[in-house]
Length: 105
Image (cartoon, rainbow, N blue to C red; front, top):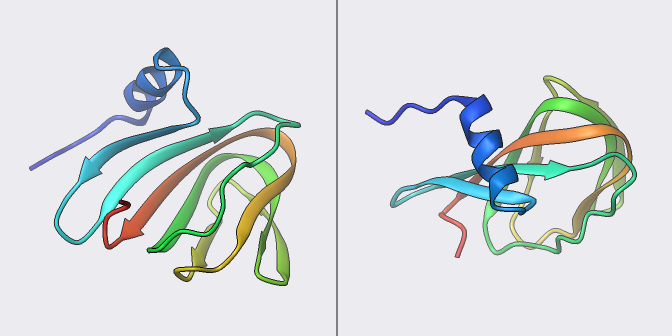
């Protein structure tokens, strides 16, 4: 079994000065923690994998393709592989659990 604590993962991500920390990689999926501070841009582009976002904290909007919705704690968003997407109008520091399938390359 592999078990993780979000507070420890957040501390590790912050210590490495990165917006993204991949903490689990298996044959069929990878999981990471993504952080964007209020007012910051989201530099990501389309990925080659399907993605699921689970918003752990914060508030923002996300655009996937041509659709936009507001997200906050507890929101879950699916992004198909190859689809342009980004978070924007980040009004509260955003912390998001990200699941890629297959694993992010």
